[in-house]
Amino acid sequence: MQNMEKRSFTSLLYNRISFAGGILAGIVLVAIILMLFVTWLGGGSSPYFGLVAFLVLPPFLILFILLIPLGVYLERRRWIRSGRRTEALFPVIDLNIYKHRLGLSAFITGVFTLVIVTAVGSYNAYHFTETTKFCGTLCHEVMHPEYAAYTRSPHARVRCVDCHVGSGANFYVKSKLSGLYQVYAAIANVYPKPIPVPIRNLRPAQETCEQCHWPDAFFGAKQRVVNHFLNDKNNTPWDINLLIRIGGGSPGTAQTTGIHWHMNIANMVEFIARDMTQQDIPWVKITNLKTGVTNVYNDIDNPLTPAEIDSLPKYRMDCMNCHNRPTHIFRSPNYSMNLALSTGRIDPKLPFIKKNGVAVLTGDYKSTEEALDKIAKNIWTLYEPGNFPDTSISNASIEQSIQTLKETYTANFFPEMGVRWDLYLDNIGHLNSKGCYRCHAGNHQTEDGKTITRECNACHTIIAQGKPGEMEIAVNPDGLRFKHPVDIDDAWTEMGCYECHTGTSP
Ligand code: HEC
Ligand code: HEC
Ligand code: HEC
Ligand code: HEC
Ligand code: HEC
Ligand code: HEC
Image 1 (spheres, rainbow, N blue to C red):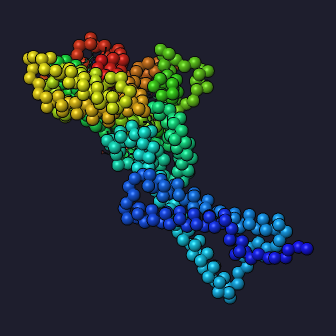
Image 2 (image 1 turned 135 degrees about the vertical axis):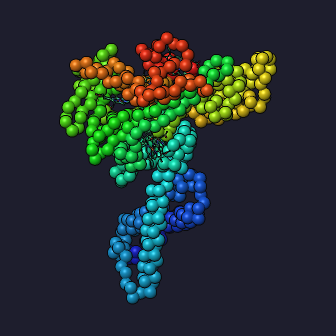
Image 3 (image 1 turned 135 degrees about the horizontal axis):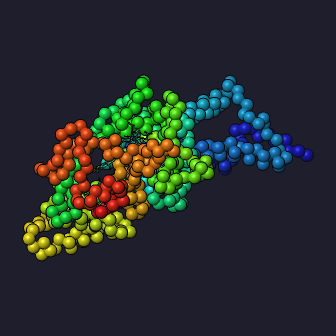
């Protein structure tokens, strides 16, 4: 005899799984609402707060809600398997019955609340993952060097995503997908240190940089004064005053001049690099987009073979091939010392402080803590009373130098991540690394003998140079012939500066 007992839909809801799902979902929902409320009031400034509220809790909420129908399903199956019957699969609603009306209103209110919370939540989640706080501080150790450098850069108020993601849903999704892997890599500690560059999947500059710097918005020349100090006992100052021919482009006339000639308006520059970091560029091709005329340059000292030219990947030059460090700028010890001395944060009267400062910054340290400790100890030892009998040295100026050196170190050196200036070379200029000379060293030639210029005045004009007070000053628009601060027999005319200067003391 069959058991004819029928169960109503509502009674199926009374099972352990649905019950647990309902209670847990309720708790999570209340938690999310509270957190939204706190955020709305302006609290919750820790990035972990946002992480929990917008990214960790919502999946749990959905999971717990799904437990309710799952429980009903399992309960119904159990009931039918045991040979019994249930009412229809879906609830039968009769709005004339008070209990049904009440149940339906409760259900609609619930769904409605959920939809609103989801909408507000995902809007916040979207914004939260776009914040600098999220990108820069959440996986603190990994991003620490980039974030620290960023906060002191000309782009300190530009959000990470404006350069790394740009606008539009397409790149948002792409970046979040690759972000998932990065989260895994950070948690499992399998990411490379330092992070390898150039980043392959950075978005084309037209869609990021050019949102703020459009090609016709900068042209002309820019003056730059660099204060140098020599390695001698007096830390002899030496200034160089240059006019940099930035140039620019006007899409209207497709005219480009100066350095920004490369910028893809009338010309397309393509190149092949032998190494990952794109420091060795033997082959360059330019195409005039109006006339279609091309020029192909190959390195005459070490040319690429036709087979290599066919097989190696070609990259199209854009902003980031030169401006590869627009915001994560890790300064060399030589640059940092020159800056500190010129701004008086280190006393130029301390004998040999330029040389000593560079030396203590470049020591081989395993951690920031060790570095800071040794920097202080070494400087104290170097300036022990009696070391410089003919100079009066105050403890205050030694202390101040140590303080500045420590600040310089923490801003530019990150031993834990293996980050320092020589691993993230800046491609602007040619002093400490090849930079422009990757193509402009004078050895890139076309078959008919045309070379990419190495002419000093093609890129800048020196308008003054020398010791402050006795500077040589340009009297005509051609500027001055470069004068090297110490006598190196005009070696700079043949060699690249970077062959002697690497960011420490030559
Ligand atoms: C002005 C644009 C800009 C902004 C703003 C910016 N970045 Fe970058 N970032 C770059 C460029 C360009 C590179 C590529 C460097 C290369 O490929 O050589 C880069 C590289 C990186 C790298 C790879 C390692 C390295 O140092 O090259 C990390 C990590 C990074 N950025 C994180 C961040 C974080 C976190 C923020 C926000 C705190 C941020 N970036 C903001 C432009 C930017
Ligand atoms: C959201 C807007 C924005 C984006 C995107 C942006 N920048 Fe900038 N950039 C700025 C602002 C603002 C400044 C500071 C201008 C000033 O100091 O006068 C600046 C300054 C610069 C400077 C001059 C730095 C100096 O030393 O004075 C360079 C070079 C530069 N940006 C390159 C880039 C590159 C390359 C990218 C793309 C990777 C980029 N910017 C993306 C807004 C932006
Ligand atoms: C061939 C290398 C090269 C390329 C490509 C290049 N720049 Fe520059 N840019 C320079 C140099 C060199 C300077 C001047 C040095 C400096 O002060 O940074 C400069 C200066 C700038 C400045 C500062 C201008 C000022 O008046 O202070 C901005 C902004 C800038 N570039 C943005 C861009 C953007 C955006 C792109 C891509 C559309 C781009 N650059 C492509 C080499 C390049
Ligand atoms: C990938 C190779 C490459 C790199 C890197 C490069 N250039 Fe060039 N540059 C070229 C080529 C190719 C030409 C055009 C040569 C010709 O006239 O056919 C050129 C031309 C120029 C010109 C002359 C434009 C004119 O008015 O005729 C200037 C100025 C210039 N580059 C400056 C720079 C500076 C500054 C840097 C470094 C920040 C730099 N370049 C980096 C390939 C490069
Ligand atoms: C292809 C372009 C180009 C050529 C050719 C070139 N330079 Fe430069 N030079 C630059 C750029 C770009 C900078 C960096 C400007 C900046 O930092 O804003 C620079 C910087 C310098 C500086 C200042 C360095 C500092 O930090 O004090 C000196 C000095 C200098 N160049 C000398 C020379 C001499 C001498 C030659 C010829 C042998 C030469 N340059 C050829 C592009 C060029
Ligand atoms: C043959 C090696 C050699 C070459 C090539 C060379 N230098 Fe130097 N440079 C030196 C030496 C050695 C010093 C002295 C170090 C000191 O006393 O600080 C020096 C010092 C300097 C200084 C002052 C100290 C500092 O670093 O702030 C400047 C500026 C400088 N060189 C610029 C250049 C430029 C620009 C070029 C390329 C056009 C160049 N040098 C090429 C060897 C060289």
